[in-house]
Length: 90
Image (cartoon, rainbow, N blue to C red; front, side):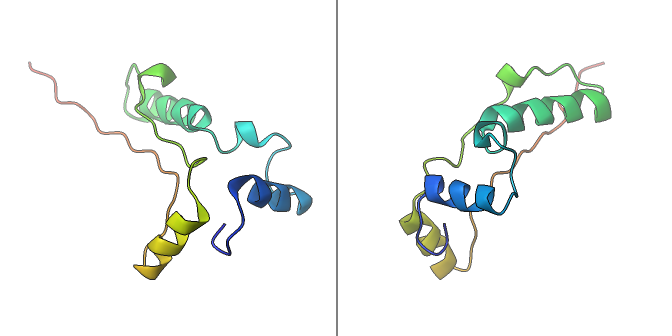
């Protein structure tokens, strides 16, 4: 995408190189990231988080123009997940 191709074309190019899973919907979706985040929170932080409770914004709507703007400002656009532990009152 950084070279100017659309998200769909970038996925097709990656698939041609056999890089992602056969169905990109399971690779680059916010649902997949939310599921992984909730699993990590539950296992590593002894949490009780469901994927539907994870706030999310995907990368599907990122345009080549947005990427060029980020690169011009020495930045990158990435799909990230973050979890913070809540303090509980005793």
